[in-house]
Length: 302
Image (cartoon, rainbow, N blue to C red; front, side):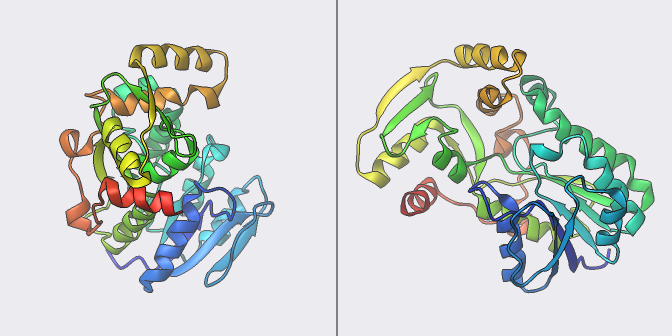
């Protein structure tokens, strides 16, 4: 396969600490070998320095997407739940435009593991997108799904993982020793760039990368060491958290059901310790590994 030089990134915004698109664009710019186009909603604030910018209607009309994708080698989706159910428009537009590679917005947990999908059904949308891409393989469009585990830096800053860095409190599940894969947002952006630089081996593949495998206890120790304070710790159980998450899901309180995602990462056999349950691509692609001290240190300084 020819080099993937002209890259479209969809889902770039200047708002929100969790926005992956901006980090991907910065990493592509730093690499220096890519011509970058950002496709953004008209209502979305978007930085444009060093990239081509195409604004489309907030409904993402397929014809407009086809025009934006024409002449491009790859489309990288860094979108969130706001466009769940609309991804087929992007895929169809990519096929019509002759795009060579489509990287789905799969970044996170193991969406090809049936247990993870059953635990947190909202992940099913990502799995469906990958199935649609597989069905398009005969059209000339190739795909890559990049699985990265939980974003550790974002999870610490937002409190998603149960640590309060200001109040120095932590909620630990069970004995706190379950290990799971995590990545930093910057390392995820590096993985995207490395996939684009290695189109042959990543064609039509689920690619698993992580910054490290860690546990709740190790994260706690890293925070206490990095901040020089002792955390006040309370304990919960996976059973309690899963029960609560399912209750919230049944009520349609999707933002309060997020603990089901955390449960899927903590329970062995759900495919989210990539080093043990999958094959890590870090060495093959040149994606660096990180230490808990490095990650915690950056979060604290940030």
